Picture 1 (cartoon, rainbow, N blue to C red):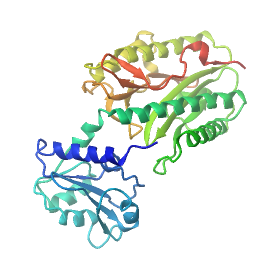
Picture 2: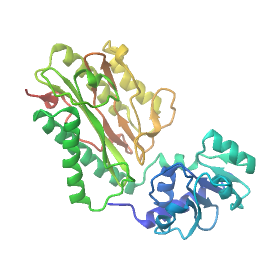
Picture 3: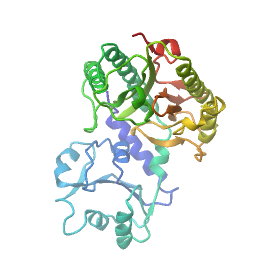
Picture 4: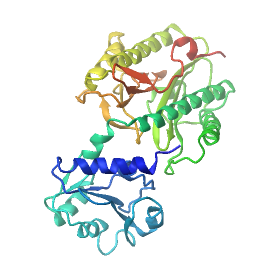
Amino acid sequence: MKLTTEWYQRKFREIQSRLPDAGLDALLLLDPFNIFYATGFFHQPTERPLAALVPAAGEPIFFVPLLEEDMARETWVEDVRSYFDYPGEVHPLIWMLGQIQAQRLGFDNLSIRDWWLAQSARPKARISDLVYTMRLVKDPEEIALLDKAGIYADLMVEKAREAIILGHSEMDAFDYAREKTVVQMQADLGELVFVNAGLVNGAVLYGDHSAYPHGLMTDRKPEPGHIIEVGIGAKVSTYESESEHTFIFGKPTDRARAYFDAMYEAWAAGMAAAKPGVRCCDVNEAALSAIRKAGFEKYLRHRMGHGKGLQEHEAPWVAAGDETVLLPGMIISDEPGLYVPGYGGFRHSDTLVITETGCRRLTHYPRDLEHCIIDV
C-alpha cells in the first residue's frame, strides 16, 4: 500500500507553484522527510548529504552520494547527479550549490555548521518553511494511509495485551506483539516501505517503569497491581498512527482509579476541544486543565500531543506556545498523561484527524476503565 508516482509528481508541482509567492526561484530540500514527501524517494539518511532541488520551473534534480545513485535512478526523477563520498575534497553541499543557477535560493533545513558553509557560497540564500507548512494538512490519500496504520497500531496493543496475560516480560511482550502485527501487515498489504526504521515501534512497561514517559524495557514480568503502559506506533508507507494504552493488572485500587480517571478526563477533554478553528495551545489547555483540576498537576510531564504523519513527531505541537489554528486534514495525537514516580504512569493516546466539524479517531481501541483491567 503506497502513494502513487502520480501523487508525488502532483505534490512536486504544488511545491513549485508556491515558490514565487515565497520569493524563491528554487528550493533545495535536505530534510529526508521532505524529500520523501516531494518525490517519493525513500532512502536511509546518513552523514552524506542528499538533496532534491525544486526549481520554480522545470524538473527536479537529485544530488546524491554515489552509493545512492542506483536507487535514485529507479524513481521518476530523471536528472540524478552524484558525488563520490563524504567529506570529499570539496564539501558535497558546496558541490551542489555550484550546480544551482537560481538566484533566490531557499533551503528547508540546515545544521548551523552547514548554514555557515552555505552562506560562504550563497550569502543571499535563506531558510524556507514552505514544505513543512504544506505537510501540516494531509491529503485524502495520506489520511487513508494513516487510517490503515491506526488499524495495526490497535492490533499491536491487542497482541501486547495477549502477551501480558501470558506472563511475558516487557521485552518479550513487545516482541510478541511486533511479530504478530508485522506478519498481519505483510499478509494484508504486501510490499511495504519502512526506510529501515521498522514497521512498528514503542514499548511495554510494567509497574514503576511506566512512570517514565519514555521508559526503557527490561526483562521485568507483570505482577498483580502493576500499572502497565503499552505505547505503540505503526507505519504504513512511513505514515505513522499511534495507539497507546494504560492497563491495570488486577483489581484497581482507589488510588489507581483516581489517577486513571483524571487521565481519562484529560484525554476526553482534548478530543472534545480538537476542532477546526481552535488553536493548538487552547486544545492543550483543555486537556491538561483536567489533570490540574483533579489535583495532580505535579505529575504532569508533557503537552497533550503533537502532529503525526511521515514523522512520529511533527508539527503542529499541541502545546502551550503553539498558536497554530487547527484545519481540516491536520493529524494530531491526543495523549495527555500523568506520571507518579515509584508507582506508575497513566496515558492513553489516539491519533486524530481534524474534520470539518470536529475530529475523528484513527485508532479505536477501547479506553474506559472496564476494558483496561487485565484480570490476574
